[in-house]
Image (tube, rainbow, N blue to C red; front, top):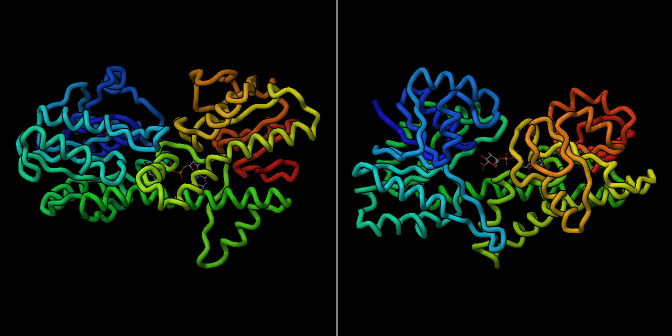
Length: 408
Ligand code: SAJ
């Protein structure tokens, strides 16, 4: 029976490991975090995702185990974090380098290392290959490198793991075919084999495309606000054109992907990334735009105290529990920079205290505020609109249809 070792049991690694196990492969999930390994071994999932529970149970039937120790084997999937360094806007490759070294310490001769984590174009040449060469190992013989960047969207991961098309980047086509067969165990989408560099670049390009397009929608929202036009109506009409497909404006772009990956290109090609940089700046300016809107609404209603304002939603988007780079956190940072404290926060997906003045009970939260700012369009708020009666509402996600409601 084939065995795959999946390193990094986070948002990508865990569902991927479970999919492999469900497809009949023996899987060892490795993570240095003892708490994650402990929880998973006891059957407790470490984050919320539609269908993940069911997938976990199906995976168990075949075989999956969780451990903190890398094990010998011939196939490894690395889904470790690839943060970026805020100051330089460059990728921090240390988690990947460290995971690759942990694999090299134990792997069989001829092992295949599949990197799923998003990496800046050129990372494999610059940081990963040297680690292999340093050990006197021969690339393409002792070790094979593959980059198979994930494409799944939080909130619909399981479905997308199954039906999205995928990219397998390798400089050795035979290895590409071998890896393709493994992924075909659960992936019904088209799987394209390309070279390593194209795989790295295409992933970053996909997320940058989305960032630039969201920025266009956000810029339109600002223009329309300036002259009191309805941006949503305008986008709706424009999108009726057969070749126009404008995305939706919002309070900012969060998450660990779209708000991060374009910086890899800006960091590496500073002289050529005018459009990409401008788009990033537009998206990063949206939390300030929301603050401006809050201020206007407070003035209009004679509300002087910011503690009468509540931000609904702490996560970076609807129906997930992931708060990374979220627009709400960006707003709170901006406020703190100007020594403005006291704004209230609530998110039905976040039970633990992440920020100051955070409520865990929705009704309690509502009792303490006059203005509610909808930052995230969770289903929870959509089914609780009736509780907002009497509140002043700023809806940054365009989920309320009532005319009385303030928009971006
Ligand atoms: N957003 C808008 N307006 C829109 C769409 C999104 O403001 O019209 C905002 C969201 O509210 C959120 C952010 O953008 O704050 C990103 O959300 P998202 O749902 O567009 O994407 P992510 O970050 O959850 O996942 C993306 C996906 N990439 C693309 O769609 C090109 C996903 O397929 C990738 O797997 C993922 O990044 C990743 O891991 O790279």
